Image: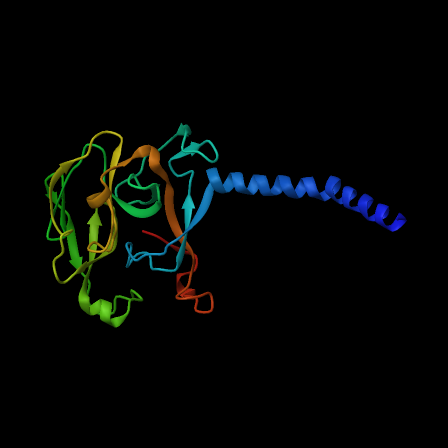
Length: 233
């Protein structure tokens, strides 16, 4: 009986001393994850070749604003997404967290013709990549797709388009109303984006994806070391 009472006292002492501190640390970490910074696993190839399946990306939740933890309610706003930013947001269709690139800003008029964008009547410039493009894509994929450098103002980045045209490769001009954004994946013919679920309200944007923290192929036994801690553009 004395031994049992002694154990109870030790447990109480631990809870009073370290238990509350540990709980506070966990709550602080969860709050930071909710409002300041987070990471996002990428399970699909919609952002290839920029983001590969198995990449884990860092999300800066303070890039544009400060939100109430665990909500999408804004406390303060100091910036807005720029064209070319890679952002994490909640899908207007089903609320799923997605990763796409900002293509159209409020007030823009966009059109797509055979996977060539026009923004406000000005065609976007494209450069076809030649030789070793170091995309870490399987050889059969490289045969089926064309890899291009798309120049969205000061943010050139890679995109891939299928050699065979798809239903996603063209759309008529669309003007974006205030407070909304047009999102697209870099894998243009294999991305469920604003061409399917429509425009994304500013309040649904979680933050900006700025880097790849880690990367793996099928398991952590096959890491892609050269992608660890690499920036996104």
